[in-house]
Amino acid sequence: MDLAFRPDLVRIVILSVLVTAQMASDGRADWFTGTQLLMVYFALALTFFFLPG
Image 1 (tube, helix red, strand yellow):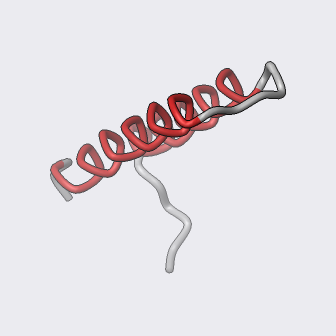
Image 2 (cartoon, rainbow, N blue to C red):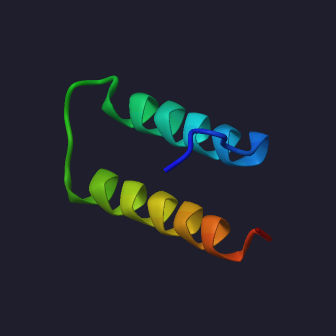
């Protein structure tokens, strides 16, 4: 695996980290927060899948 990542994919990973940090910043979690994170990750996975190679 090479480590030559495209800039748009790096931006998506940074966005994922920021969303997760925002959700986890209050120190509590419930099922709705988990569901929201799963939906964000699903949307990011679809973005990775449909981006042209």
